[in-house]
Amino acid sequence: MAGNRRRVVVTGIGAVTPLGVGVKATWEALLQGRSGVGEITLYDHSKHSVHIAGEVKNWDASQHMDKREAKHFDRFTQFAVCAAAEAIADSKLDLSKEDARRIGVVIGTGIGGITTIEEQKERLMERGPDRVTPFLIPMLMGNAASAHVSIQHKLKGPNFCVVTACAAGAQSVGEALRVIQRGEADAMVCGGSEAAITPLGMAGFANMKALSKHNEEPQKASRPFDLNRDGFVMGEGAGVIVIEELDRALKRDAKIYCELVGYGQSGDGHHITAPCADGDGGIRAMTAALHDAGLRPEDVDYINAHGTSTPYNDKIETLAIKQVFGAHARKLAVNSTKSMTGHTLGAAGGVEAVVSVLAVTEDKIHPTINLEHPDPECDLDYVKEGSRDLRVRAALSNSLGFGGHNATLAFAKLKL
Amino acid sequence: MASEEIQKKVCDIVCKQLEVDAAKVSLETKFAEDLGADSLDQAELVMEIEDEFDINIAEDAEGKIKTVGDLVTYIDAQLKSK
Image (tube, rainbow over all chains, first blue to last red; front, side, top):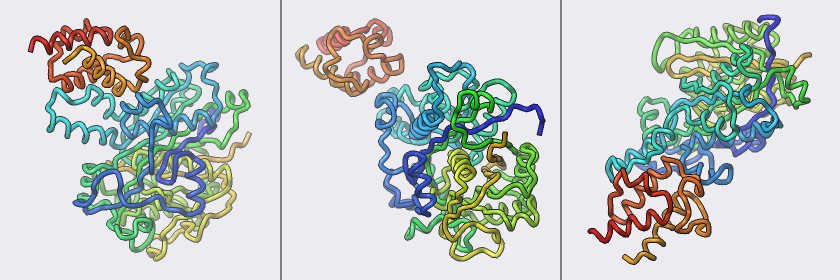
């Protein structure tokens, strides 16, 4: 950790998840251990092998943004615009008075506008090429969410999009941190967004054997670290945070949640979907984040795990945590937000950044639900009994993506 | 088709596509200046109009159609020459 590096704090949070629209609804449900998974309503799933997902229920974009604009935003962009508006409002940044050139946006996604692609492919087949919407490209492109958040708030700082599957949200936050540390901006709106509960998306993931087929009991299907886990449950949503340079946050008397103290990343260089059996990628991401943050393993009290509920991830992530933390691994509280939201892919790192920020700020850890039959190879404290009050000095949030992209964020209570 | 009928259908499509109140749309209404329709909005509008009236709007004509009235006149002429 460089001694003279710019420090960065979190001053705003926003979320759209299967547990509700807004941080409050999401956090309340998480603390209560409520699942957001249910039968799919977005399309006719009768011919599919998977009938369940964590959908954002009763979503009406026009309640959160201009109706005409919403029509030309893919669902993943709608979620991002909504979560970003909440985070910016929460930060109380007065954008009319700020230098917009010093505030940027990084919103990641795993897949982009797949809903739009499918709708327009049908239109192409039924009505011909001359009837494909001229909005197709600007709606489907992965950077659309980041672009529209900047357009909505007239933010003119660095603006890009990270597309690294399930690590996209976390890497977006981490890269936004670096933008501020390099002095290219003073505040960033960052996180991830995803909406891939579509016939094509679900068929693709199902045929990889990645998804849970616990169709009969949707709320029990996502069961990270449980012996009977059989894959992840698809989720959707967005998680966005506002981060800014410490001195300016103090100067404007902002409400500071906590400090974003570190970011570590690594690549597996191994396989397009399978993680390394020895957990090497996750180990190096966590180790790099601790080093970047100047934290010793024993300074960390909580890890928001990637915890997808796939047989491999949960076992290998557990192994990686034990390698990094040694004896201290047993003293950590480790949980999986995905046990309730499902796996929101590129949004997950953003949503789980919001959750980690709240854990550090409120000293509360939500449970991992459905952990009924512990897997002997998953033998850490996963907070399975219910939410817990715990003093959290520092927290890590892990995101490990298809492609072998690994990212860990480190948050800590602000010490002046 | 009577000109009034064309006008009504055009207004309905414009209101639906651009999410505006019917009260805001008259023959004098300009697509770009009054309704904020950008080039993509206008391209999408052309598709709906072509389908509704079963006509082709020539690309060189698109640039000359600035108001709702221009569009109604164009459609009227196309339908009459059929």
